[in-house]
Every structure is written in C-alpha cells, then in structure tokens.
Image 1: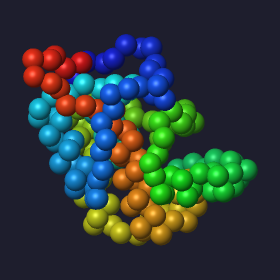
Image 2 (image 1 turned 90 degrees about the vertical axis):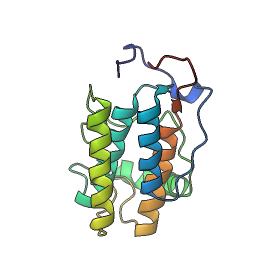
Image 3 (image 1 turned 120 degrees about the vertical axis):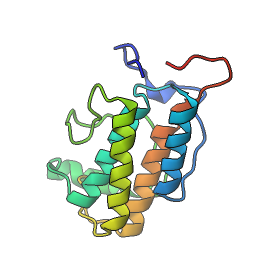
Image 4 (image 1 turned 180 degrees about the vertical axis):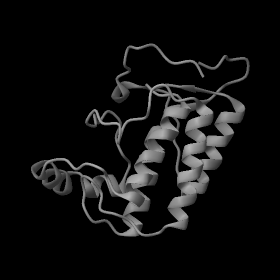
Length: 170
C-alpha cells in the first residue's frame, strides 16, 4: 500500500466514513482481513497496516502496561472528563496523542506487517486476560478495557472503506 501524501487530513472533517460495530476482536480481525483481501481506500491519515499496528499497540498497553504515563494532572483530567465517554463510546476522531512510539503506528508500516501484529496481539489479548492500568484512565475492569478497545477500533476502522468496483486503491 502506497503512503498517502505527507499533508495531514483533519479527521474531524472527513465524510464518507463507514459505520462499524464490533462485538469482539475476532469480528475486528474478520473485517480487517476482508478489507485487506478485497482492497480499500483510507479516508484518514493511515492505511490499514498503520491502523492495525496502532490498535495492536493499544491492546498491548492493556496486557503489558504502558511504558510511560502522562503527568498526574493530565491523568486526573482524563479520568474525570473522558473515561466514561471513551468506554461508553463512540470515540471521536481528531484527538492528538503525545508524539510517542508507544501510541503512534510506525511509519511506514506495510499492511501485512500491521495485520500480522494485530492478529498476534488479539490472540494474546484473549489468552492473557489480566489487564494493567490504562495510561490515562487508570484501573479499568476487563469489560471496560474491552469496550474501550473496541470503540477505539471502530473509530479508526471507520476511515478504511472497501474499494468499489473499478476503483483503484490508494
């Protein structure tokens, strides 16, 4: 998959996004594999591989813990103002995370690499049920972790749309 132009897309203003809902991460993987096999366009800043790598990194933070934490005032504000919204969903696009390799997808990331990383991490997610505290929201129940991660995936995957007949992929 060729990289999109260096200019960043304002994801708060993108139209044509898909409406997606996942009941579990296996449904997410099935959607990813359909898009990878059938071709896709991306309306945001990341192609499928980068989205998958980013989602894999987020899941790993629940399994292994985040290597860094924001300062306590940021965590306190995040817990108070954003935790319930993020867990209840949907997650809104346009939030800018700190420029940290922990959160952002590697650049470049081929689709095969990102999809493989997500598949491996989803297997770990279900095999290793103990969860670490969230970097911003602190201790979450397993159900909160699951909802948060699926809401997060739905937002990112809404920017990946199936290729239409006779339409080239980006």
